[in-house]
Length: 215
Image (cartoon, rainbow, N blue to C red; front, side):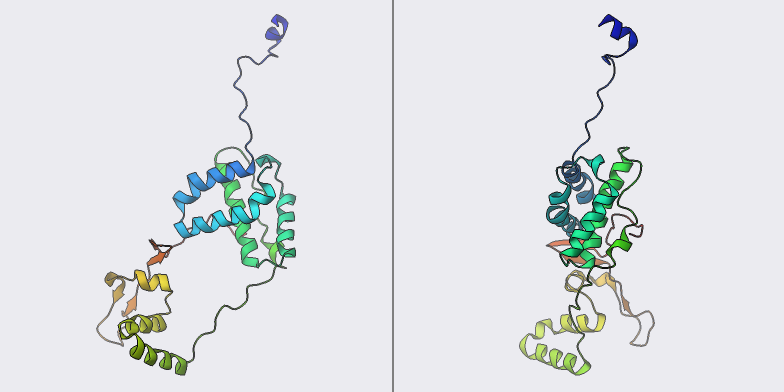
């Protein structure tokens, strides 16, 4: 022991190296201490769903530093093979990229294995069209029916058709968001869409992204 102390081989006076967390543990901390504080509630809930459905099953028990770029590319290939939509695949990449960005900020990593992977999602299927715009005649019939069956909501439906707002944006609209102008031809006649109502919570329409870099 004296010989080893002299040679500095026992390491009695060195701090123990911090243990590398698993991806699952680190991702849960990222959700708790970062995502739920920085992003809107609806956005954070979406990221939580991505973790539960795709990332935890794949990498949950893997050490964070053991996940390679090839591992992530393999996940992308598996998701595409399951016919998952391109938006789902790209959102999953965004989440894992955000987690590794946080690890870089904390000094755990020097580079992010999940960057610049967007080209590998090109073969994923695109989402189907979810809706078709009403024609002018269909809009007229819809508004006439609203006047007869629910006249109190006719202004809301008229605003939805004229402004193209989503349900949450309609519900959260405030008087201060409306600029009536001096008449119908006034160029300063507009709606300022800056509020939203999602999952029982008033938020803004400015959604935060994990990373502004292109994937």
